[in-house]
Length: 139
Image (cartoon, rainbow, N blue to C red; front, side, top):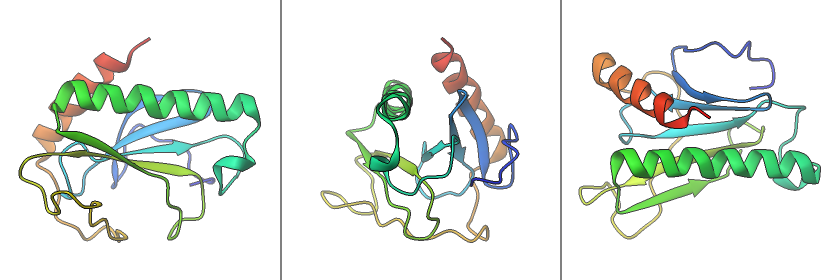
């Protein structure tokens, strides 16, 4: 994640929000509609407590902003926020809208590491969602 050139899209997803230090990427993998990663793009850190107070404010403000946009657009029952880093040791947060028809109702989302071979969301549908979310996230 640290070495990314920050493309507008790649094989994993499409950027729906970007600031100087944060990217939000809606995922192509058909894991959950609206599944988005908010990725810290400042200096390398693995844990939130490694951020300065100013960096922390910037990061969590972005997580909240993207979370609200996802919630407003998809109208889920609940949003889940998972700051893991077990597979990729770089600060990022998984945002997962939770719906009535859900793979694990009432429990944490069964999120597994991805290798790029996952089934994908229809590209046209993903682009419609990405465009709408980008418009909602414009400052």
